Amino acid sequence: MGDTSLPLNGIRVLEFGQIAAGPFAGSLLADLGADVVKVERPDGGDGMRSWPPLSENNKGEIFSENFASLNRNKRSITANLKNPDDVRHLLELSTVCDVVVENFRPGVLDKLGLGYQQLTQVNDKLIYCSISGYGQTGPYASKGAFDVTVQAMSGLMSVTGEQQGNPVKCGVPVGDFCAGLYAAYTILARTLQVRAGGKGGYIDCSMLGSLIGVSALQTSEYFGSGNTPLALGSAHPRNAPYRAFKASDEYFVVAAGNDKLWSEVAAAVGMPELAQDPRFITQQQRAANQDEMLQLLQPGFELQTADYWLNELDRRGVPCSPINDYPKILNNEHVKHLQLVQPLELPNGVETLTTGFPVSMSDMDFSIRKPPPELGSHNTEVASEWLPEEQ
Image (tube, rainbow, N blue to C red; front, top):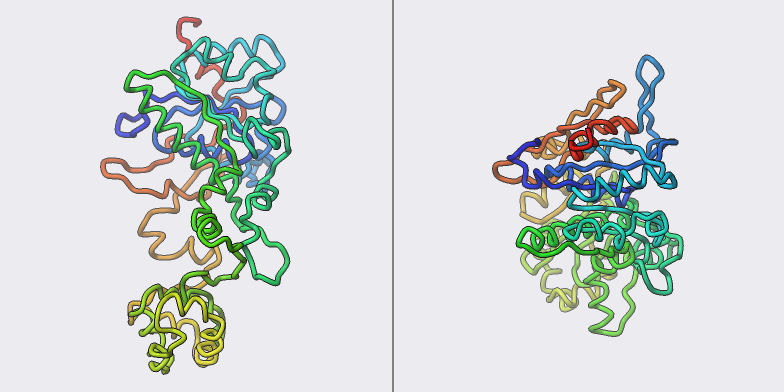
């Protein structure tokens, strides 16, 4: 079964996922063709099922669009993890699946008889991935974690926002989603080993490690200089002009990352002599003196609208952008060209939109093959397909 044109067709995944990190890892695998079966508790399922916006049909039936965004192309089965018969059924399913993804607190599934050590005894090819805030071992292993707490712990919040401002988290839950990305990437790497004849294995993916992993420029700055990376708002520690500027009507962003682009910016604002100013000759000097640069450029930018400057800088080949909100970017002509927005029908019949898999690949057209599942809607179907001998 499945679509043989999809690269992960034939891969079976049991997802014990809740809210974001685990479900996002599962959704990446599902979008590329894996048969992802989401295991949920019978009394309400994944907590994200109750998150707004809740789209309602004419019968009063509701469905969460937040849940839908992370759970399309999956199937749902229900299981009471404290019921021995349900646990036994999940053990049977694990004998014929390739991957388990879970993001419970460390040790929870072990106590329920569904940990790695228990499942690998019945399937030594199994790849078992645990996603947690701080990893399965160590001083913080049992510490509770949500995205904002791990952003704070990881150092990411220390370089987000304005230097003298209040603490600010990234608006996107990057702790959850970076962990999901690392988890899916590592699962696929281990899958290659299994396909080459190797055994399965255990993957311990932490949100903390994932955020430190994507902070390579900040950590290397500290390792190389001993200096503490700082919050710079929209500015950059090693590049200038590389920040938001205020036009006569609204802000826009400029990223002039080399000498030629800097010369074009200086010429655009009518001050070409700045390109030869001793404070701004090299990229390193521009970064070190970017506060003075801001004071010189800002009055010029305030003389025209953001659209004017974006057109002028585009004409000169200088990377620049408006600061879009989501309605603007999701209705943008380039986003439409990339087919990043896709139609989606919810299980209650409501027609809505969602974002598609964001990477294109030759010989593969992304599609929503399965709508986000109703709770437990595939109990019988999964049992009959994965365990046909029991029927």
